Image (cartoon, rainbow, N blue to C red):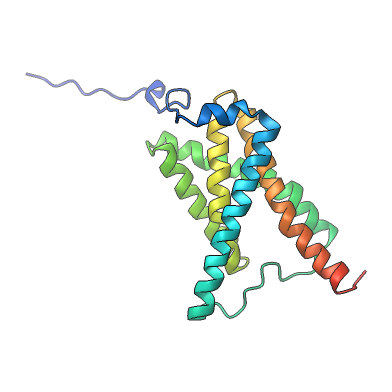
Length: 186
């Protein structure tokens, strides 16, 4: 008696169209622009909550002496980097990682979670507080990619990238205002 070993084909890789959660259809019915704004709000508020817990934990245990989120003076280059370059490049790299992880048979949820942790660690090398804020945001960006790439990959890319840009706008604006307006360095 011989046993036939089946090699999974590319078609058997979990497809986004097959996996669907009950609320996902409602998310897509919001429309693309409304979804991106909503995803950015969820990412931003979730990140702020995690940053709050991180600050509370750090104030209790004093693990990180410096908690500066943006240690440098904001310039046009940093604003461009935060609002244009980083969202596009980081989203492209995130998508490549997510697609690779799914191809090696990780579930989409595990892929998004692992990717979010990696991006959190990478952002945490710049400033420890960015670790806490980045994890949740990148989880939302990864989820957005998978949700909207059901239509086409371009929609998935832009759903993640535009949400990322909106999220980056808030801290960039805060740092810009704090440095140039509140410190009167104009």
